[in-house]
Length: 186
Image (cartoon, rainbow, N blue to C red; front, side):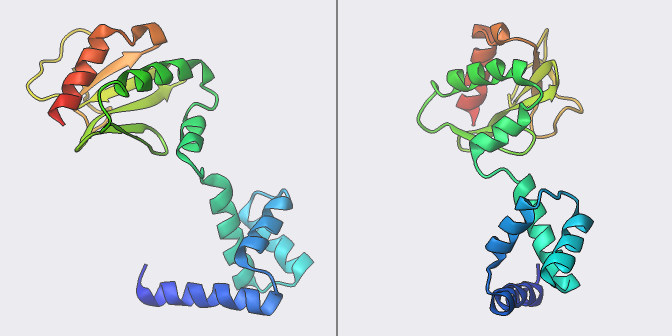
């Protein structure tokens, strides 16, 4: 955002508290406690029940929906990835256990749709791609795709190779050695 837009938003937030006696966070909590989820419903609620102008109601609704939808921690991000795919979570756990053995410099960095595996740079990623499959992306230099180690193709441009997994038993010595090789190259 531009400095002017950020300044205007901050002024609006300060004026909200000055005019209503409650902070933005307090109004967000009130909006979320209403049980309403749609933007228009929250705006209507704040205008009719609390006398908000449209601008303030819009601001609070946007913030309430952002905080409701945004996971707060890395654990929340991972939980959201495996929501409805709980049978795949043991695959993720086995992968993370294996990768954490590589060294103290491994960084596990959950994102919205996948978990990045980093050292000096990203060496792999773990993504629950379907309800029955986890894909492991690997950055491997000078390694020919063969068998279950396939080129990443359209899966993800941030990695060179992919391995498809449907059970934790497939987190075997072969896969761990590929992960280790990618880690060593990072």
